[in-house]
Length: 137
Image 1: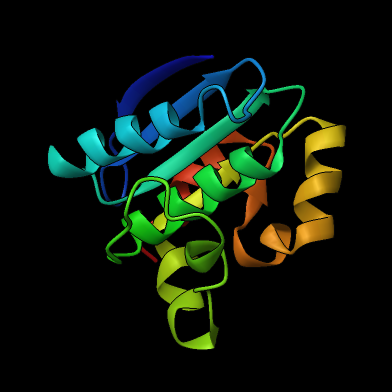
Image 2: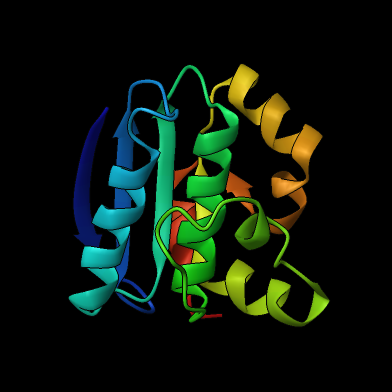
């Protein structure tokens, strides 16, 4: 798994985290840790580019969910697992959705996101510039 960040200026500063490779149990903790590092450096809006991710496991789903909670301002313990995955509720959905979005998941990954309900929590976009415009609204 390769994890790269870029910062884009728009209505608000948005960090784009580009993931390349399978997102699974072998690397999900690294994804959370790198997102935590960006958050600690002041990032508050995150667009996760999934265009280079052909496969996502349940551990990968928990990583995306944990990162979304983190950027929504909720404390996330690395490796929190199922309790963290169940912590989305109607009260925190809106703030999570405002701070984290997904970009261009491959069809197999998007299908999994839909099946587990993350597609309903996190907006999915296919155009980088358009997605960047939506932050801070």
